[in-house]
Amino acid sequence: SQQGEEDPQALSIQEGENATMNCSYKTSINNLQWYRQNSGRGLVHLILIRSNEREKHSGRLRVTLDTSKKSSSLLITASRAADTASYFCATDPTVSNSGYALNFGKGTSLLVTP
Amino acid sequence: NAGVMQNPRHLVRRRGQEARLRCSPMKGHSHVYWYRQLPEEGLKFMVYLQKENIIDESGMPKERFSAEFPKEGPSILRIQQVVRGDSAAYFCASSLGTASYEQYFGPGTRLTVT
Image 1 (tube, chains in turn cyan, brown):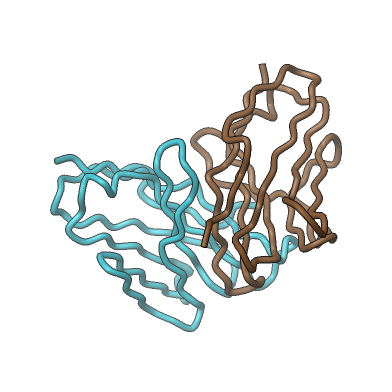
Image 2: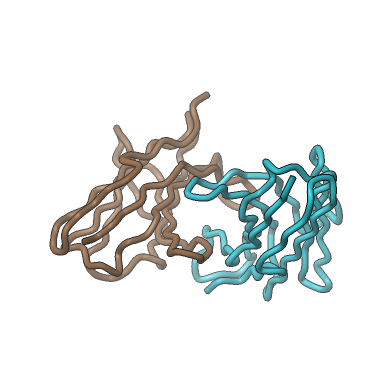
């Protein structure tokens, strides 16, 4: 079953603004990963945060993880038109019928306009 | 280091035909995962394989679908007697290990059943 749920479903901002996407999940996890998918393309791995980490940075990306609230956020600073894509969180649960599968949410569709 | 390769990128089949999707993992990766993505949806896990072994096929439909990862050559996802509901994007991912390892995705194969 899908575990990650992204919020909002869609987000439209202007270039230079920051974009924040949230992800909630239901059960305990080993790690949480964020991916980007451009329209009609494959997934690009952005960042992995482990369950014992609270924050991680990669370039203009900042990911936080709150295991007590079972939630994560992805912040993209100083957004660019090229950031337009769908963003998915994927969890690697500690207990699962599919012990090796990532559980994906439905994604947040981000539109960055010039 | 080439990424995950999938072919074909687009595949059109008539109802009742067979579809064969191929995936070559990243160099050095021996763990392969197949996911399916329906329009406007996140990815759903199908099967996890290591060389010559199916480790977890809990997400695979019981009938018509099969997967293999032979000692030599790519992983194959095979769909027999395709139906319109099989139309989707099929993604392959590979990783170095299981828990807490990033999964790297290929560009996907878009299957259309007419």
